Image (cartoon, rainbow, N blue to C red; front, side, top):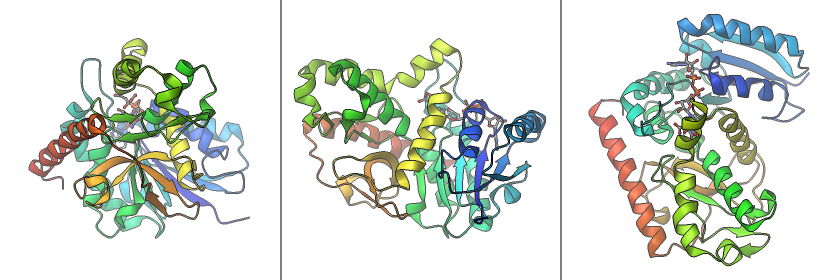
Length: 330
Ligand code: NAD
Ligand code: LMR
């Protein structure tokens, strides 16, 4: 048997965890050839619930699932891990912005960054889902200087999927036809879902939709506020679609991105690309080579409207960075 890949999921007994583990164990994250060891991290009060989830994993008899380690110990959770999906943290309640979670959740990511640096496999890659995910990713990365900056990701893929779905519906076509849709900046209500560089069935979205007021108005705000709308309707934050987006992110980062497309994911800014300040974990259009490397896709045209929107989300992320610096988290 091929050597199993260790995959860590934090907050494994939570809502997203429950939607994620079974898909990963069935091969949807790393493919049908990759046996997996799941390393599941929870806090002590949730260990009993996690026991039940592990029973269910056993009861699925997944051929690819080589082992499951459940733990509340950070070092054990990240030992030899190649993919760390950092989900565990508190979700927001109705009426809160994701940034309101910074003081609650920020503290989780400093020790996790340190534990990843001390215990993970040399090829580790990290996807932060727990909110506010961009700045939580910045915190973890800042506390794991040994791990190259290009291994750290925060999830804006759910926003990309939401935006593609809105556009496909508006145009009356399949979602697979929507391409090159970048989410710039923060996974928050300031994000900029970039319709102007996107295409649908090979045409520009702007000409296919032919309704600038909708693109700059309802489309934009629907995507920016979709998390709050789901939260209000369900009484709990999105879970199945979030787990789905986490899987999409990893699959997209491990397969070559077609030339006419991009992956939306927040990565560490080098300070030069598209003039985004260095070090922020910022949503960009990314292209992966399928061998582990990726680059920010060049050639996106940003008009005054886009630049104005990107400035707003940049300023928010700079503010979040100041806040976590004051809390001594970075
Ligand atoms: P949940 O409350 O159902 O589950 C969170 C789990 O994390 C719980 O089981 C809890 O015990 C565990 N946990 C808390 N602190 C922990 C710690 N220090 N270490 C390990 N585990 C810990 O929440 P959920 O619905 O699964 O959401 C999880 C996070 O994902 C929230 O912050 C939510 O806002 C975020 N989220 C992000 C996106 C995105 O697109 N980036 C989408 C949806 C949700
Ligand atoms: C989402 O976008 O659904 C999540 O980030 C949850 C939230 O609080 O909005």
